[in-house]
Structure formats: C-alpha cells, structure tokens
Length: 468
Image: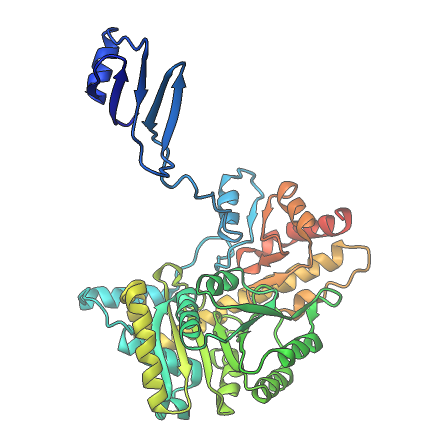
C-alpha cells in the first residue's frame, strides 16, 4: 500500500501521526482506536484513492491501481496475428498462408542473391552510419522515381516529382495521409471494398475521412467494374481515389488495360486525385515496366498523382522498411513546396529514415549487372507463384466433382488469391486443416509449395461445400 499522511482525531486533544508512525504502532499492537475516528484529506476527484471503513473508523488510502487502468486490450492484428497462431500449432501439415511474404518451395524465407551481393559491397565500402537528411538518401530517391515513372519521363526531367523516402509502404502512405489531413481538410479518400487491412487504420489515425467504392463481385469472384465506376462518379469532386497499381490486395483482381483507361477518364472528369499504392512492382508479373503501366498512364495524361512505393516484396527487404512517397505536381515550384511540407511532417514523426535498405536499392538499381540479376530473380519469384497458382487450380478442378468453376484462381495475379470463403469456412480451414489465413478468405500463394497444393485444395473443397 502506498504511503500517505494521516491525521488522528478523538475527544482527547488531537495528535498528528505519519503513516510510518501508524504502521509502527499498529505492528506493535499498541494502537487503540476506540472512540476515535481516522480522517484523511484526499485530493479532489483522485480516482487512485479508495475509502475503507471499519466501524467508526474511516480510512482513505492511496491505491496502487495503475493510471493506465482505463486502457483496454487491443485486438490481435488480423494479419500478423495469424502468424502468432501458426507458430503455436504443432501439426505437421500446418500452413501459414496469412502473411504476404515470399517463401521458397521448401517454405523457407528467401534472401535474394542480389541483395546478398549488395550487402557485401556495402560492407566492403565501410560506409558510415550518419543520419540521413529528412527526405532520405538522394541516390535512392532518384532511382525509386526512375523505376516507377521511367527515367526518361518528362515529369522527372521537369522536376515535377516530390519524392521523400518513407518507412516502407505503410510509412509512405502515412506521410501522404498526414499531408491530406493538413492541406485538404475537406478531402475524402475512397478505398476499394475490400482493401489491404492497414489502409483504414492509416487514414483513421491520420484523421482523414474515407469511404469505400465497390470492387469485388462475389457472384463472379471478379471485378465489379460497373459498381466501381458508379461510386467514383458519385464521390464529391476532388476526392482522393486510392488505387492498387498492380496485384490488388487482397483479391488479386486487376482492371484490364482498357478498364484502366476508363477509370482514368472518370477520375479526370470528376477532378479527383489518383492515389496509388504500389507494393508489388516487378513482383506481380515479373516486369517492372508492366507493373507500373497503370501509374504511368495516369501521369502521361498530365494528372497530378500521389504514389506510395514499397521494396518489401520485390527485393525481399521486409525488415529494412524501405519505400517512398511521390507526389507528381503540375509545376516544379509546387513540387518543391510539397516536398518541404512532407519533410516537415516527417521530422516530428520519425526525424529521418534508415539508411541500409536505401543503399541496397540505390546500389542494385545503379549497377547494370546487379540490376539485371534483380530482374531475373523477380521473374523467378513471380514464376514460382504462377506455377503454384496453376497447380492449385488443377488440384481444385480434379478433386472437386461438383462442377464448380475454379477458373477465378487463374484470372487473379500476384501473391494472393481470394478464395471466396466466408469467415466460418476460414475457421474450418484452420481448426480442421491447420491452414492459417485471414478471415476474409485471402490466401498467400507465396507461402504455398507445389507439394502442398493438393492438401490445400482438399481443405478448400471441404470448407466450401461442407461449411455453410
């Protein structure tokens, strides 16, 4: 019990005792409180004081209740929590298809050979560990913009791109959200339904209002293009439209090139601002250029664009937290001002970004031989996932005798497949089959091997047909 100062009062002349005195007398059995009342002057409205009564004696004592008592327990992260549950399972056939991280055919984490070489070169150079500028490593900022927009793009030559290194895709999105909150207080962000689980958290924490546009059609297990267009048209003029540049997460469903043109038409007509999240450039199709086509098309139309990038997937730099936020403006002057404000936002948020991942990216892209090797490894990773996708489709089609059409698996792209399983069916996948996945029915094919495709197919078929 925390110590306090007490005052003892009775019919006899009052005496003043400290808590130490009371504890000492009480321990010796010499404290006679008959015909006395114990009083304590407590702080007004102090929730950490409690009143205890013993007959005619009232004590107000300091309680050791935590000042953080009112903080509730947060729910587990819906994605990262899957891995925690997976680790606690000892079943030999268990599969972790929750987290979007590439695995080898042996289901082991993979460090790209080109990253190992870049790491070795950095070690040999013995570069220092001094603070980076707030905007990040200049060499990284140059190559990341070149990769996304094309090195010969007029917006780069005209210095109309404000690029700031961010803490991977999440941190880069958060910087942009803070910019929107600060300079577009009337602005609203439209996000796809469904979308990556962290998008809503990012905009909620930045106090940026958001709403959803239709994207996934459960009837076709495909794109609800008409619903998407109707919702973007109905949005208030000047809204921010969050788009997945390639390999939509969680569905794996991308618009066709013709549909991208129509999306750009509507956004341009409504004076909306396109806001791209690019997490899989080069990792979806195996081609850096093909996976950036949607963004480059919007930029070529002369539109002002926001684009967040991540190198977690395409270079396997998950723990390095390396990415960037790019804002394409209509003039170099506007780009300079935007960059200055992004730096102003970053300074109190995390001061400056880490250097190691930025140097790896800059060195790989800046070296012709390493860049060629990186492209080959991206093609290999994308190819392995495509092979797994093909094998899963074959297994589903051969094992399921109901006649259900599983071709949507082949039509999706990237590391994820949206199975159309509901929450109860996903629970069955975990409790009965020891397959861990997010409850929206998304599975990461990057965490699947060819050897486990038949087992996964059996689990999906059982869950789909036998669990309502």
